[in-house]
Length: 438
Image (cartoon, rainbow, N blue to C red; front, side, top):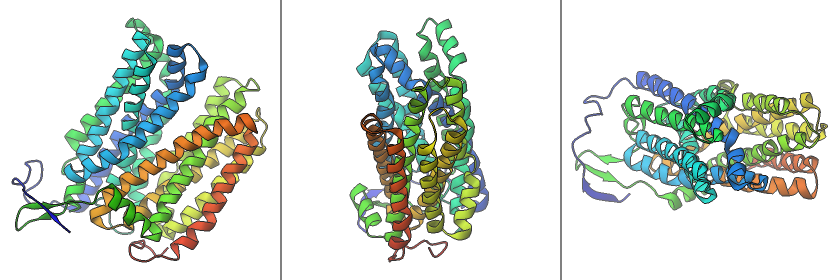
């Protein structure tokens, strides 16, 4: 690998003179990332809950409500690769803090845009808002930097699980936050984004102050020649994609992440619309979505244990089967059957958790160290890009055909993934799953 011939300064004062106990640093890292995820999840949860409403309010028509979700997802996709590049160059902390601060800036822009009634400015703010989502996704990889072999998925899953608290609590704060906004003389719907701004800022502060030493630096993934003091260049985006494509198990991990996210988002975003068409109350719809979020995050530690115990690929296959079953159950349910739809959406979230946790662990372990952060960023770009496409097509499918056909399409996608994963993984060459065979 070529070297960038720039002399590095003496080690940053933030780094220890002697290598600390890796196990204790790993425990601290997971704890700090978890706290940051609670705060970040709260900000994302409350922002997503009212994003469509505030867009419709500013534009004066409900037709643009879907743009809020689309721009938020696109923002996460666009930010994924630059944040990964910054992480590769400056460490895990720099990437995560930058993402959260950009998200906070986006929340502030949304408040300003709503106050002056500017839809373009609002959409720009939501695009920046997506940066915090990207940082939250990349935080899960921070838990793997120092994880012991065979424990990668469990470490990753704990950080994913921490998102549960904020994601569930956030939407429930929308109403009181709106009253706070009104009391400040702002449009009521801006109140939740004031909470988002505070949550993202606090998350960034936690990461900046407490994520020390930087786990990625300590893991040695930033290649430094100690003899010359020069830093070796890490792999860029294109090289990272080549690294994934050239390693069957890494590719399986990427496909599991992207397909699970696309299928989940497609069905999830249209379920409230499907129920609302038959006048199901917003409180009942909210309960169904809350159950779905519980399925996504609540059992993540169990998912991580299963992936470490039985292997990544079997858990990916199980997740795809669960998601296919969930789509069939949801598609067969009546629009006013909250119980059956709740079961379907819970299983949809659980299957997504299987695919995300096992797929992320498999991808991280299947690429070389010098391409790992780039591969992680590329996976998040593909993941959010797939969700943006899936979410956009979902509305078209429901409008042209029905919710049942949308669910059927999601089921077919996941059945294909269940068949493809073990077949592709069996062709594994270099970069196999380092913790378990298959």
